[in-house]
Length: 272
Image (cartoon, rainbow, N blue to C red; front, side, top):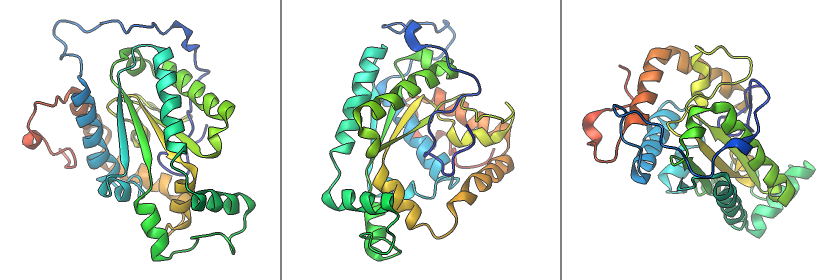
């Protein structure tokens, strides 16, 4: 799959056919060596993920639509405690249903006009203040997985799980209102070299599912002052300017970050 037009709006993409997720154990195995840092707690995962959103996604302006919901406290971050696929899928489906239930009549009408291509009569279209207010209060959900180390260790396995989640949205009809994006510590877009910093657009400290409301995606695109198709190439240039070594160091620091550390220990938005 080619790079998505927008950060966070890509469906799961793999370099090779993902393996079956059937082999994922129902209980995560402890595989850390004695010298490794302690397994992350829920506060560790939450803190590292939010620091990643603030310093990486927003700090580098990789997604121009991320700042508004963050400032408006519109991001729901769920730190999953699932230790097996049954619990993971049940939790994912429940979160998708919860987010889809936030649709209003105005949201549904906007989607209906967008699908029909009726730009002239679509509600809230254009660049009015009302449109921008709607974008600022958009709802979105991140599900970060810290209790299943196998997902962090194996990107292809993670993609298989993500593809099953995508299928669940389609089978339930929730895909009409919910869109899925994925992030992973070892994310790599199809066709990109391992050492290309460009894949850091979707590299996160923990495997993460991002649930977006389709209407919010449409509103963000409609209200964008520019061409959204230019965003991916611009992001690649930004990341290449930062450099692979610096990006890898920052990501490693986030993975190792623990909630009892002081915030002033590192400013991850600065270049080393």
